[in-house]
Length: 420
Image (cartoon, rainbow, N blue to C red):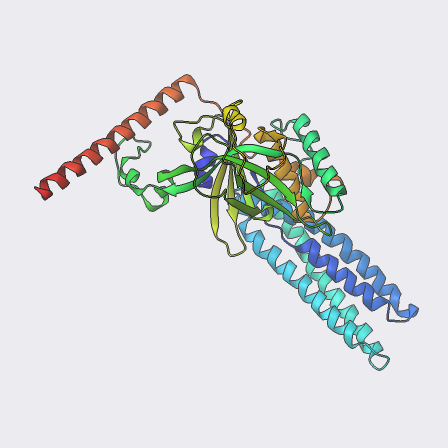
């Protein structure tokens, strides 16, 4: 699915899986501090110097590791071997933290001298590991051509970025769980698979061929789950940065419903990639051509899910809103100021994802990291079709649909023959 959407000319952004080195090194430094509080001043000088070196080197490594992970997830295969080194360094820091905690807990006047010697030895070993990793990671980044730029992508809207930043900052100041930004009035889509389409997919040679297993992605179709949905980002915990994306079905859509509105909630941390298409053509839905925002979600068990949110037309549900019936069992909910802008939702999610992964305010984030999270991976691709591309696409779709209809009719005739 990633490759299919990337080829389709959509804007794309990847949220790298956090390496964890910043968290691990933070805990390690704190365990050293706890140990320092329990030993004489005469023994602190060397340990303090080594603690400073560990903090500085892990900060440098953290930036490089984030860049490598993000580039690798985006398809830079030359960086994949570096991921093993990143995991090894992270594991080494975690082992150091565990060892330091054990030494600190068992420290006493009887083993103080031995404990100081052991701590110095552990810190020397960790510094050696960091010194070995830094040049290798720098070489890996240099040979891969990956760079950390502070300049924003031309596709980034300064106005939307400032608007989203202001809304995130306002939510950060709240002392209780709250919405981040407005409630959005959107359409909610999910994926389903139509294997019967596989044998009719045209390949580059314009011949009907057997479709390989990897080409099963071409049989993906999208279905409308909620014709109207109220979407919002929720800040869940004020002691840390934790966000949820709530999609609540809205029955004020001019259709008959005999069930209660449904709600789905996703952890923002589970969003691995986002794709934006201005034309909405990626969903291949004849009834809608409005902009869409697609999400690749991966949960803690590595289960993958794809969803999409589409922009509704201006005034599309005005009649439904004016004719809304008030339920006798439920008090009417207060009217919320709903927004239709997918781009604002996209920027809010990017900034919230950055805060949740780093557990740091966006205003304390480096320019390089912020630029990475705002970068459009497909900036060189075109979002809009040329007249020829559109004509060819419509012709291909018509031929495919005609072939599917013919096959369906043939199957019906065969069934009639069998029944007679």
